Amino acid sequence: MPSMLTSPANSYYQASTPAPRRYAPLQGQQHVDVAIIGGGYTGLSAALELAKQGCRVILLEAEQLGFGASGRNGGQINVGLACEQAELRRKVGSDNAAALWQWSVEGVELLRQRVRDYRIDCDLTDGCLLAAETPAQVRDLAAWQAELEDSYDYRHLQLLEGSELSAAVGSPLYRAAVLDRFSGHLHPLKYLHGLAAAAHAAGVQIFEHSRVQHIEQELNRARLSVNGGFVSADAVVLAGNAYNHALLPWRVQRSMPIGSFIGATAPLPDALAAELLGSRAAVCSMNFVIDYYRLSADNRLLFGGRASVTGREPHNLEALMRQRMATVFPQLAGYGFDYLWGGLLAMTVNRAPQFGRLGQRLYFAHGYSGQGVALSGLAGVVLAEAISGKPERFNLFSRIPHAPVPPGAGLQTLARLGGVAWYQLRDRLGW
Image (cartoon, rainbow, N blue to C red):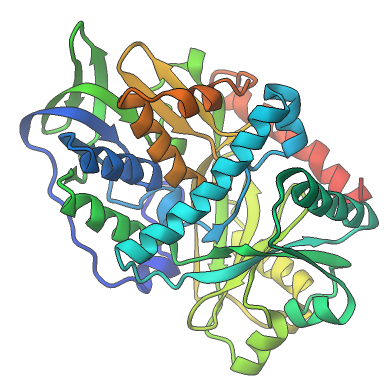
């Protein structure tokens, strides 16, 4: 069977999405204001914003729209960055950390506004639960809620324990959870194709199966060599996330690709679905190696986790996923998956996204570390602002310091294995 990491995912999302519009490959030469590389949320968001400003925009996708994490993720819409606010305060100061938090809230608002404005049918549902398994995690959870309410005036959180917790999520693992009513979840591929339709209607030229092989920054323009043709542009946005590495020099890379996987059960009976997730909120555990799951519109449990630090699909992936799902929900011990898929996402060492610029014309944003559904849409807006001469938000994101990653797949894998082993030990010991 071909690796799920190197071929388009045979996912529930693809099976449940109406046949989308397909876009031809690039042929010949194009001259535009902005060229965007990557047909995921970041690229489409930037393209839409720039086109609304009157820019001539071209978007180039090496495979097909949604091939990367944007088309196959867990669908969870979260506020905040994947790293802790305390770490952001240490790295950029309290005022800047507060601004980054507020912008992440804006990212969720932006997503919801686009769903309304462009009438995107993507099963948008309110509510995300952050669930604690150990006494230490319960303490961290309470501190997290207090910090967001007291420091950032975020008033959408509800602590669940006892019968309220059992009614919201029917797993014996959890001691407490916090429900965030402002966050939520959606069908990621339907949302992506809705964004693409909006961008195309705004005038963006979209080309699929158009791989950029080389970028050359000349004095007045950037020149992109593409299989099938060439593009010249005043500015270039590199928005390939885990697939940026072939075009971004090692000396500026601060993220590494890891594998992430999701399974979808058969549709569950209504009573069982209500027993598992009476809240119908998405759930994420507090472990470093997280479980994340939610119910689809047709009552399938979409269960994700079991990351691969090697970037390859584990040979016993289905057995691992079924075992973990049954640990979280013993009620599903006899259930398998109708669909099982995965792919790469980009993770930074500190789990904050990396924004940057290479030369005068190449901008990039990536490394959302598993929390990019809303944040990547905001990133597109921030990139568009920078290109349009308003770089303040881009510059703040760019000032978040990142540890370098080792060059070469072998060294990267060793670094990831060491880091994950340490955090898995912490998970087991309840630190």
